Amino acid sequence: MAFEPSFVKIAPGDTVKFLSTDKARNGESFKGMLPDGAKPSISKDGEAMAVKLEREGVFGVKCLPH
Image 1 (cartoon, one colour):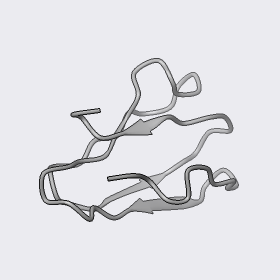
Image 2 (cartoon, rainbow, N blue to C red):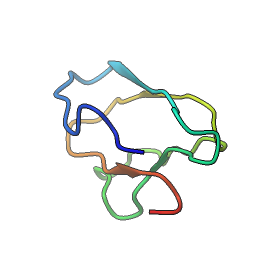
Image 3 (cartoon, one colour):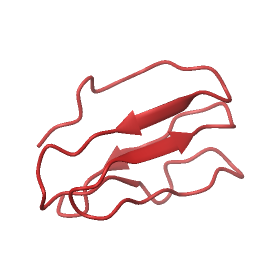
């Protein structure tokens, strides 16, 4: 599974929705790859994850096995 597109540019306050195409994969933020004060996010395997991004910066996202 891969996140497509691999990069998106959004404005603070926008919501990004990650849709799982594999029931054995999740979406979660990378520890240490969030702007200061941003909340980490995680979804259950096979479930979509919607994240409202309030802070400006780079947010790293992965699936747990990778």
